[in-house]
Image (tube, rainbow, N blue to C red; front, side):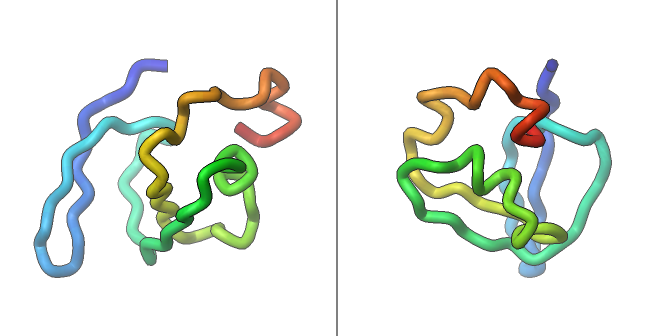
Length: 75
């Protein structure tokens, strides 16, 4: 899946630039933070985060990949 350069604009007009993944559409929502060191695949599929923008803060997120059975985990 090719990523696309995107912008996250906050209510105070602060802008962050990054790479997108997932659905190609504009969204708005409450930003929430997860500071866990492991378990991010579970966080990304946790229904309690529905309708929110999930920010993962641990700097090594993504280093160990995601489960190979992605469909089972909703990834």
